[in-house]
Image 1 (cartoon, helix red, strand yellow):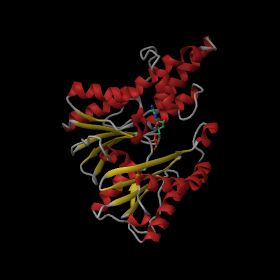
Image 2 (cartoon, protein in one colour):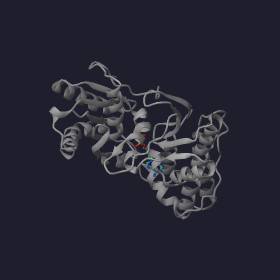
Image 3 (spheres, helix red, strand yellow):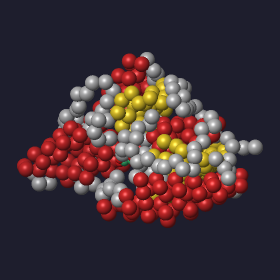
Image 4 (cartoon, helix red, strand yellow):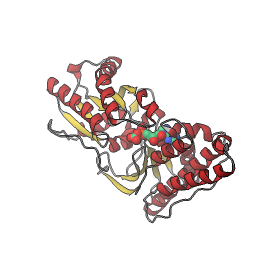
Length: 340
Ligand code: KG4
């Protein structure tokens, strides 16, 4: 009999459901929430309401696309946290109710562990070459920037993390300064393609070890713009592409500097990237170039598995299922924590 896992993700503003059978992805359906665009960021209460509207159709669609009936499911995996409490409650409550009604086990999944294990999602007809343990994973999203030492599917250690803003937050907040829509990361990525990355210099943090900081860069970006605007009120409009390219390359230099240090100190040549910011085209290119230069085997997720998705929750749930790591129905979601 096949092991069939339903994965549910609702940590922020994407409602997603996926089906994995014996480790192979059969479906991955995500409903995005456009309602937040007008507000320049995710509004928790609106996100929660949209999850309530989306969860049943999204799960239904995922099951239908996979050709799986509820009675065939072996277990349900859900994102327990970190994330927005109101959003998490919708996915968590649905997962519990569904598992209870089918009398099947539940697995709680840490969203960040899910991002890392996205590298283990197998698709039919697609060559599967996951990272070899132990490997390093740069996990960069809207809420996190971490370097994770991944020892097994179940054992991960954060060796470095941001002490203030996350890389995605730096993209989004600087995009806001430029008057760009939310989320700003993909827009900066697009505009940077036509810009000169050496046009402007922004400050870089001097932090020991593998930790990150992006708040100084954000301030330096803001002050640079403020100073140029005094001379030319059209400055942002005229130099938007160069500003985006320079900002993006500074963020990538900061990120890659610590990954290089960790790989060299720990003598690890298996290096992966994960999380929403790993969709960035220049960061993906930097990983490939580093792989060639430093003889790393690099692992870059498919675009669909970079931002929030339930496939990564289902695959993490699958490994937990194989390991017998089930959770109790009384387990509450959590909003803030690290991968540990
Ligand atoms: O992982 P994710 O979908 O959500 C969580 O934060 O958990 O990441 C969202 C973040 C946002 O900050 C968004 O601006 C950023 O990922 N992002 C990008 C790109 N695509 C998404 N940042 C830079 N370049 C991109 N192409």
